[in-house]
Picture 1 (tube, rainbow, N blue to C red):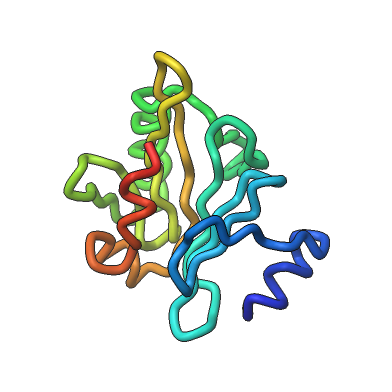
Picture 2: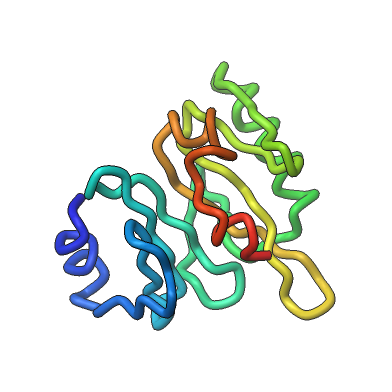
Length: 137
């Protein structure tokens, strides 16, 4: 999706750039940050506190206890013969699903911040995800 198509999918919500470098947009009113690669959507990050709920296999992924969701993800990918990856920070994900379950601080607790992304980005997450995403915890 292009940036215009992404904005339309978010009900024509106008992004608030707020210092984001080119290739990133923050749709804070819906709790979503998006990242582009060569002008095309490559990653959607959902805010753990105010973002929309992402559901996979009937299980809600946004704003959950990280340890419980890591166990769930491990079982989910094992049942389907999919891969399980861990980033340099110990975040679980699956390139086959295009999913990374990061964490985000919410006061004194951590909650899951799901990222839906290109499998190539997950496999090279340190290089592909911008530093602003790694600092959003």
